[in-house]
Image 1 (tube, rainbow, N blue to C red):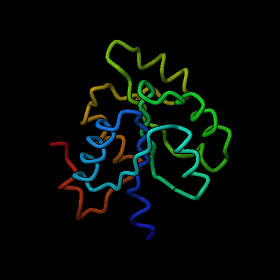
Image 2: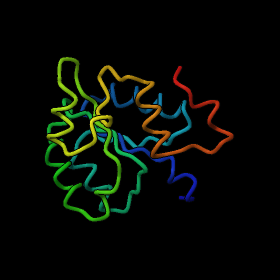
Image 3: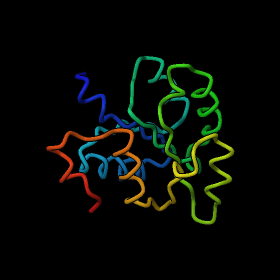
Image 4: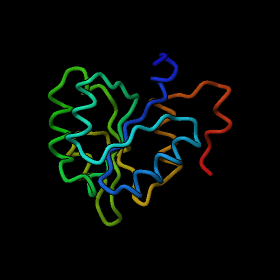
Length: 139
């Protein structure tokens, strides 16, 4: 896979198949290359095989092994530098979730997804080529 494509690869970990597909569709519309898995265990398997996403989007409420995934990510020198963006359910405190998962508070995006916040985070960590930026705005 070319390096330009790798800069757009986003690993989506979501235990709800329909939700994962919906997020993947949105990411594709914005110009990213989503790679969806249903569990943290699957994510670890693909990362061990050499998958190199520019960011990881994790829904902690549909992914039963989210905490184990985060522990594995932090334990790996190679994976811990990959930004983790976390879907936080309504009523959950993003600050608490950020502290529990050891991520910056602005990496917690409210669910249903705050598309503007997600787009800003992805642009920060997975900037699109200039020619694609106009298409990448949330719709």
